[in-house]
Length: 187
Image 1 (tube, rainbow, N blue to C red):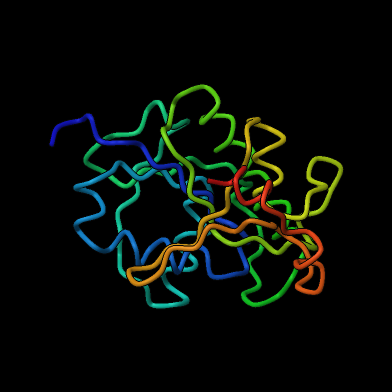
Image 2 (tube, helix red, strand yellow):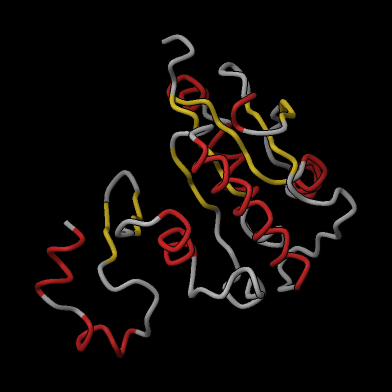
């Protein structure tokens, strides 16, 4: 496969959460770079902090200004966050929320411009990301607002694939929200 591989934007999520751990572990599988060109939206410095703190596999990151510059034989990173951000693993902080938003916003901008083909989002803390720029229950609703269309949240593993019909609502509200029309809309 040549340089026709799909460019996969990966937003780093909450910098105090599991985003970089999941990203590094997934990208340590050589098959990942054979099927796609990964473009992480985040911070080289924060990525290095996570790699060292969690003893994650070493991955050389190619720094680019946007997804259009991504090299198809490398793991690329677009630095979206102030390099002096403080990481506090396991803590919900306003800084973590803002860093998650900055990466998501840049990734969505590059997706809209056609510089990347798809977007994968690492987990965010839905409370600390809330701001004037982000007042949504989660990624799905934000993406629907910014990109249009009907969103479908997918949860996928080797054994199971789940398409979420009702989105970010309390479990107690599912039975009164779910309908035949909503299910058909998601198909």
